[in-house]
Image (cartoon, rainbow, N blue to C red; front, side, top):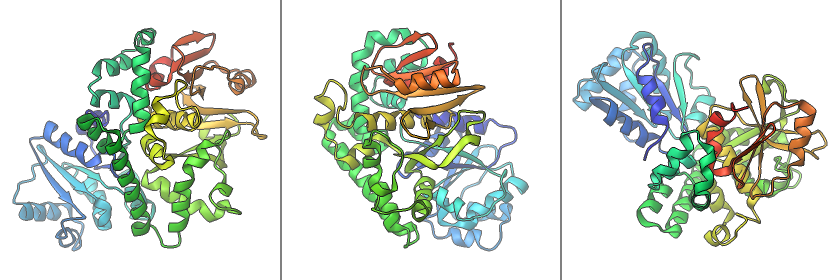
Length: 436
């Protein structure tokens, strides 16, 4: 599979002053595969170390954190010379041995010539819980499920993927029906590599759903295995509530949907756990769209999303027929899937942090806000072709927006300062948002 993250890995390799790289992301998003592919295509040699399988690593890292001794011990164990100019050192599931994470500081300070890439399914948890290495000694790269353009390439539809990258949105109308059909498949299959690969090989939606259910079960097992016992019930209830949260007209997270009488302070640690694992995504409310947006965050109001739209469909028990036999694209659950999709594409295909805006009385809400240079850009996500967007108009008039984006199943067009982008082309937001 072609993954855009390979470009970030190549850019890291080409840096003159390179730090150890830590790749974060939810379980099953393809971190290990991508790193191994990177090693095969960009290096003469590599050494792969899995900390959850190779128990000898305790003896390597426990005595001290001298990077030169560690390298010598690894060479002895694996009977391989580690040449800093031609060998990529891969530390996988590194969170299983916290002292190995700490050692990255000393690799950067005392042996920066070695090229080290690390990955782990629960790295966010390990880092948050205090495995210590000073800020600035490592670099981070976050991995997500396949974006829609990556999905198109995996499906063999490279022409459509390239068209999205070419910056010629006026051509979309020529292939509108094909894009919508592929978008429906993406909504159901999602971007988890195992699910996508299975469909490419077998064209079996039932098998895709079984894989998605297995991944959800794996996440549930992680709750019990890795989370503090007191948090496990809350984590599970939060995760299970995401479909119901997104099905509401107002998608602001409501604790009462998790449990009657639930309070924020009872679930703060559980939400943080879900976010740290990468299996949930969060968009905070901003009360005022000022610069920078982060300075105006309302920490008490937010939307919570799954990491993958296919997993959301599986959690919601949404069937293939519900997606493929309705012309208006997911009529009963359309708002939930549309916002999930747009959120997922924003975090995986751009550098922007998505927020959302609503009035204090919550009667007007703009689905997403992003900061593009000096501009605050509102984004309204519509599931069908109905372009009525009262809240977007209110926002534009109130804050004198220079540019606004409306994404839907309608064709691409520009009307004044509003740009209509088809849902399937939201990954082009970087190119399109600078037109006006």
